Amino acid sequence: MSQFKSKHGIVSKSQQELYMSFVDMRNFTQMLPEDKKSYVTADYDTLTATVQNFKISVRVSGRVPYSLIQLQDVEAPFHFGISLHFDEAAEAGKTDFSIEAEAD
Image 1 (tube, helix red, strand yellow):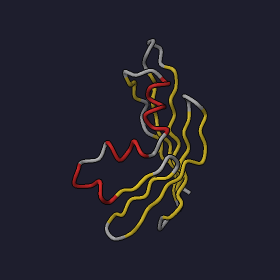
Image 2: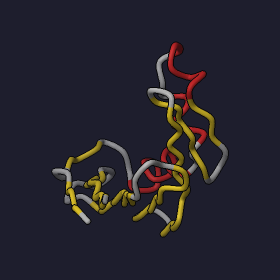
Image 3: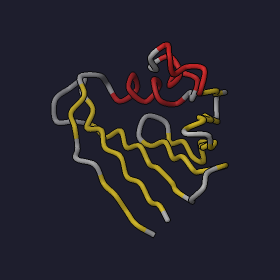
Image 4: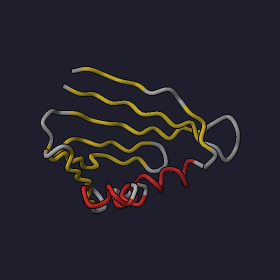
């Protein structure tokens, strides 16, 4: 299994505010361009996208309020997991955000 880690980025939102924007998978569909929305469906825990005629689904496998959201593949041609980290930044009202992924 391969591991990937993003750089840490400071986001000008509190941990709670940033976490809440990612906690509901339906929020991701709102961020998509209009011409891509028909390829994506979501409910609170699951997001499914059709890309080049194959379906990829992820489901929230864990939530730690305001600090971590874990996603796991449900229906994909390969196995993967993604962790979204929301850490307290040195500056008040900001979040140190990073992503870790593991894939076969």
